[in-house]
Amino acid sequence: MDLKIINKTADEISIEFIGEGHTILNLLRTELLLDERVTLATYDTKFPVMDNPVFRLKTSGADPMVVLREARQRSLASVIRSAVSLRLPPNNDAAKQLNDGD
Image 1 (cartoon, one colour):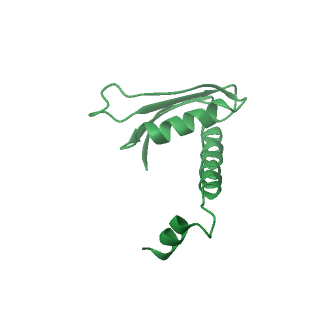
Image 2: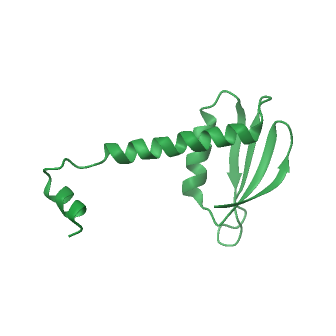
């Protein structure tokens, strides 16, 4: 994932996410909005086919890069937990086919 920091202050950051779409940005935005230190988490794509989305994060005094990194870790952990919970029981025919590569 390629990122370009457009603007950064003590409590705000704007980042261009090069080549990324709604899936990852919406997951990140949702996770950030659960954080008490976050006052704004949003992204915009002016022309979805042509432009890279720009993510904007504003905090209530916390370093936005630290908050963003922590949210990234929580999001990743959440995705892993979800994937593990979706595993099929080992005695299921579909699970056997997936595990055997058939």
